Length: 126
Image 1 (cartoon, rainbow, N blue to C red):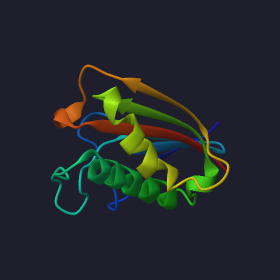
Image 2 (image 1 turned 90 degrees about the horizontal axis):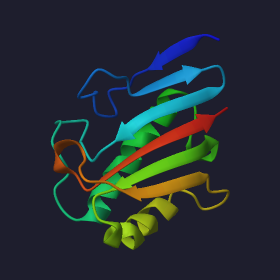
Image 3 (image 1 turned 60 degrees about the vertical axis):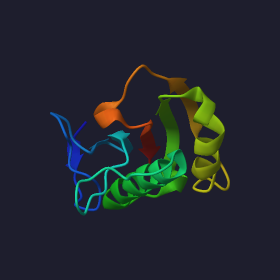
Image 4 (image 1 turned 180 degrees about the horizontal axis):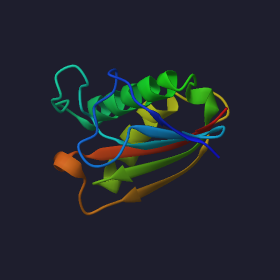
């Protein structure tokens, strides 16, 4: 199966040896996104809702670059620094999946890149 690297300037450039996403056949695997502003490369400063909104915008930009949108998402993984923020993250996340939400897990972790509070990765299918 052919593998195609997906890149867009509308989402943050990778901060390590990985790609924004890889399309393999009909499946798109999106690397974890944090609240980096793709325009200036700075972290979105503010509350967990602002961070989550930027993460979702970054994910949408990558989906769009692959010719997809949130309706194509079949699986998400959410990583939180504080499970006490689950409800706030879930409120923002739910705005992007009005119907047919994907499978998902949410886990609390000991640390995330650049000290952010949330990171989300996705798998989508055409």
